Amino acid sequence: MIWLSWYDIKRYTTEELRNEFLIQNIFKADEVTAVYSHVDRMVTLGCMTVNEVVNLEKGMDIWHTFGTQFFLERREIGIFNVGGDGKIVADGEEFNLTYTDCVYITKGTKTVTFQSNDPKKPAKFYMVSAPAHTSYKTTFIPMAKANKRPMGAMETANDRVINQFIHPDVLQTCQLSMGLTQLKPGSVWNSMPPHTHERRMEVYFYFEVPQDNVVFHMMGQAAETRHIVMYNEEAVISPSWSMHCGAGTVLDAETARMAILNGAAFVVSPAFDEATIKLCNRYRVACMPGTTTIQGVIQALELGADIVKVFPGEVVGSKFIKAVKGPLPQAQMMPTGGVSIDNVGEWFKAGAVAVGAGGALTGGGKTLAEITETAKKFVVAVAEARK
Picture 1: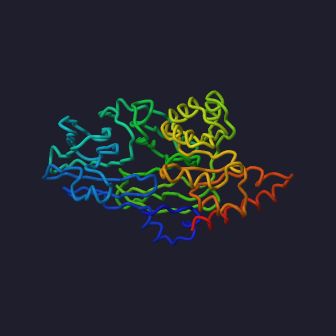
Picture 2: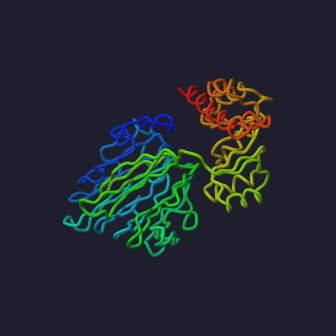
């Protein structure tokens, strides 16, 4: 799957939506299925062992697909068992998994195998893998050790418990988070109120769906929703689209924490502050520190900043991004200050991943209608620049 924006997807037919985002036939006997998405470079996998001990890499061309010697050389993986009892062996360490048990396997693990205890009741291993920059501890997480968060209410048909398995409150990972939501009888909504995550995409896997029943998975933006009809043991890729609530001009970690506790999905700062970046990473909230030096860009990358804000953009110009992209092609940079509808194309041509607009959007005493019209022009200009 290639990276697609909402601007593209809103024109898709139902068939095109299903082709791009729906993952079917996840479990095949003694095989490993894998879908590699360019959205955050996530890999969704499934393995149902019946008569064989199956290697994680079965059927994959690791070097061609990932450019590494083995699958987890630069990746981490989370695994849930949604079938019968089974066993996972990771570099010689054995884990016995019953229904809904989970294992986190760290970067650098060379060999992972799966097997079922009873071929008549095969284990079904559902997996998600993300890029990783360092190694942590491979960990077995049973349901009893998951962090439990009751949410919702019967009155709103979303009474549920979110069981956080791979989560900062349970164990350390590079970026992977996984959980299992249990709906109470009579509740049908998983994510309500609807929301998005600026920092990351998500993959939703639905199971325990009765035969002949379906799930209507909602996606898109609040005023322009789409849906995909799904059956039992199917997954769907959910990119981080639509509007988000965030906080800008954050100068220190204290202010960042206040913003996060009040619901900010991302934090933008005009300057580089190490403590702010670390705090955002701790809470899995996107952080965008500001700088206009290559040293600042390198430090931001080393600390795990999601995007580097180039500020003030009008001082260094688009040539700064082009120059930095030479030695640091992996740097994701977003200019603010000096960005206008007329020069958006120049910034993207130089290598910007996004742009930020303040005065150009709201300055000059614009009315709400004028701001809305300007925003629409920005959206069109950005879409044209990204073609």
